[in-house]
Amino acid sequence: MDNTVRPIIYIPDVYERAIVPGKDREEESGKYTTSYPDSSFLEAIQQLGGMAGTSEIAEEVGCTRRTAYTRLKSIEEDGRINSRKVGNSLVWSTSG
Image 1 (cartoon, one colour):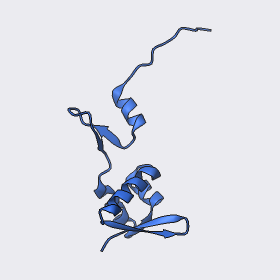
Image 2 (cartoon, one colour):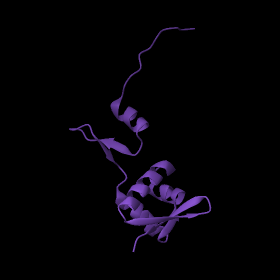
Image 3 (cartoon, rainbow, N blue to C red):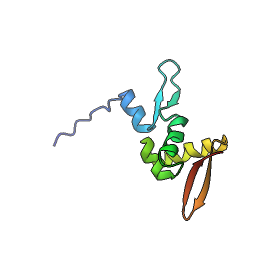
Image 4 (spheres, one colour):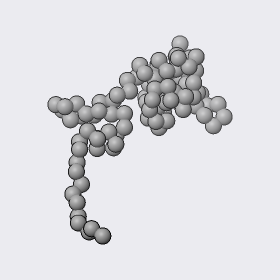
């Protein structure tokens, strides 16, 4: 058996995406930017008939359920969408 210790190779782009899915880093500032703009979530709700659950929206956008929930709550705080509890799920709809 080979007991040689091998160094871990750090590949920034791969490492960053594995740690923070759905986020990219700006080259100059190093700050994270989202790869899922608010418009993606608003469009997903519209595509799903103007009302949809968190998991459905996540699937439509292509992100995790947790990411969708966090982003949808933020958009709701801005007053652009509403949520209501139906059973054990939240259903999101466009405002107005």
